[in-house]
Image (cartoon, rainbow, N blue to C red; front, top):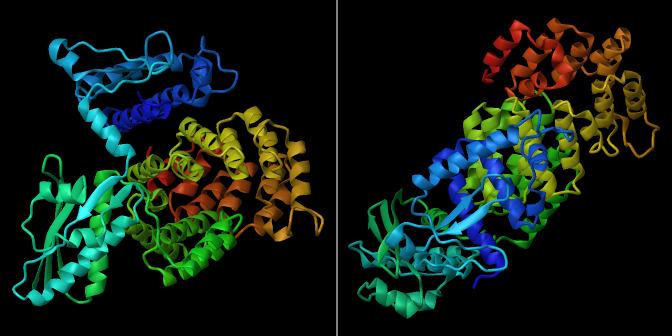
Length: 594
């Protein structure tokens, strides 16, 4: 009998398998729908899986959604049932567990097929996932459960020195030591000690015998050949129970720095094993000084601000100087560059993008299962207008860490919004809110996206004490005088009040509000004040209804990439540009799809 947690894990593993299939990986709407109903049921909220709830939470409809006027949920449910049926008739026909959405409702059902039943009649055996536990009928599933929930036992046999010179044994032994050490800091793996592994050195290779002696489920073996200044290292991972080679690779290197080569090859092998075995997170080994600095950088408040982001970047660089193998520091550095470059429009943006890419690529090289690293490279692709690659990397980051609200927010704000996928953007921020319900940053992002979606009443509930946010709500509702009152107070605080220094307050929305109120002189004065920031200028000119100067300002923004242009064109403040033929040319210039 399995515990409820075990049952839920089995279902989630099947869900991941379905979402990775061709029919779902390219259809975000259906994937989101399926995830919502499955996770809702597993979370004990099956009673909330109603049409009205799904419409709001999954498809971004307003709170006053009327299913009689908008059949989106029923329509998408029909598509989802058909897509699931197609999956199980093709890619999933050998799967042990079926997830389905019964007709007439939105509560998912889970069915498992036994090997015996399928062989005899092809019929499906119903298994409940409520009070009755999910019985594992397939031996393969039982094996999967055992090895997915117990640490994976692995042994590294001493690498064989196949060079003519036996003096090269030291290098093969050193690389074996590095592999054992690196594998030992992976959560989910239990690695046999050097003493045990080296007790088999020089003995004839027998995988079954070695596995039995070392009580290991997997054996990593290989050889090292040194010829002059060249090295060739062959390794393979073998599953003991059936002597099947799961993975093998060859590394050819120039012999310049032996210890660096050992580190590089050991890292490559370890990361490949983690990807194939599904090993957990690394337990990073670093110095106390480096880790203390890393925590200081993480703890800096308001890192979405350029100044603070650069403070964090400087500390991350100090961490890297102390430990060049510490992947989270590279991911943090890339994130700091991303935050900095997103806020301003400076001449050094090319340098920031170069540093951002290098840091993200290093993070993934050092730890390909680090969610923050994939978030970072997604931001790089986003800045380069590589939308498909960016989305795939964001989705990979979420797959690796579904609890990181920042990734949902980044996906929503920096990719879905510029592409005009507003309902999806709201949906991702709803996920972020569920993952981090008390985060002021997530609340602010959600409020902003609801404003863009035209859902002003909903947005107001998330504005909290953010004056600029509430002012945007009032502007959207046409209550311009109220917006001006809010923004004037916000932009003219007493010297020492809770709002902080005057230079931290952005006056652009006050300029926009003045423009909307017909106070052209006041709006023009603020446009001069914000002139170094082309986006702020464009906002104020849009409020004035000046299409020419709005597009001229956005053209300056375009030199820095497509994202801010896309954000502007999909925001209600820039509605004045709707239908202007020059917008099409601007979109093409920056690489935004039609």
